[in-house]
Image (cartoon, rainbow, N blue to C red; front, top):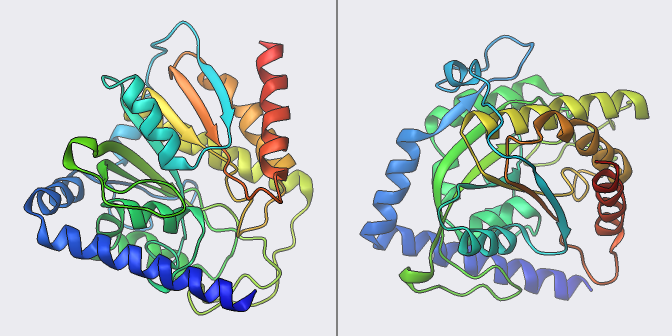
Length: 303
């Protein structure tokens, strides 16, 4: 098992390094990265002193009006970019945004070390990593959270428009022809880290686990997903690719996470054309998908 894990890490690192080399060598990709960096918006944590200069604050004051008669809600077992590319190809005129289940302390999480969580996958397949790995975001987002030593993190968000997905989103990612590249927006936000040992080499701070009641966790998650939806609305996204936010590496209970989304989503009905929960799971552990499917189907039937 350990040998298989090491092989997977090595493959992940090779895919990531190939993506970074491709970006460095391709002028179109370099230009895309620079354009995204110019238009990136940072939304500081609400209710806290500003984590750094924000270009997102002014936009946040304006609430987007309802633009659709209804909002479709769907749950699938697709990977995040897989779902997003399907939606974009069906609706090329729509803006599609993907939620990045971000590390609060390191751009791309453990992507340089071959980790396999959702954020790392997004960074291996696209131009996202160099757009997050900037001096401005290091100061305002990553160092800010490192210095807090609080594994609950905050609802600060990073909005990176027009990320290019340039590799296939499957078990063996491959370069795609330029005509197949997909342009998407990405919203990065960190879920609370509920692991027994939340600190490690990439997440400095005390090693003791977070102690939070189920009621307090639901309240916190509702605040966080409301912020994510608000940032999406302010940037006039049409289709959102969400998922089991925090229910993988960060060990949030899927029942609580799904309930948080289900209780907040009605506030945004009509703002988005579609909300697509892409809940990819290993075949031997479908719990997250089954929970989200049940909760969202109940939400749909109640409308």
